[in-house]
Length: 123
Image (cartoon, rainbow, N blue to C red; front, side):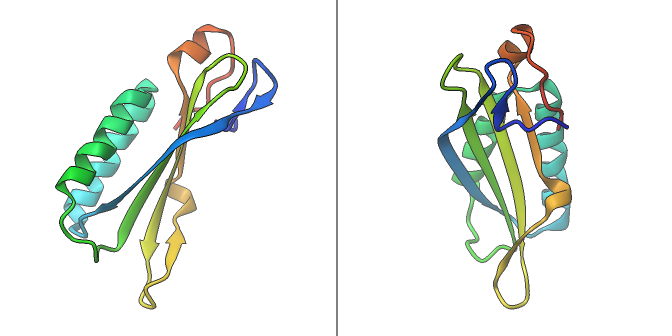
């Protein structure tokens, strides 16, 4: 998988535009449903859709003591303005420390980057 934090076309690292973070309900079914939605959106390389999902989850967030956290780093190439997404998931352990679930990391570049001939990363 290519590094979505790097613009292949311009040979430059992307810069963080906005970092979004959300705590997800601890219900196993809800977490699985959320992961499925993220996978679908990443498959379409829909940065706006993913950010919209995170914003919706933030509005619905009620329990700050949940054990699952998602971060979405919206990145932009300083040369061509292509958008890249770098997403990570974390789980809180018994000691209340956050540990990254690297197997559930996700990332992609937008469709415009693909049309420009860059190699998009897949989720």
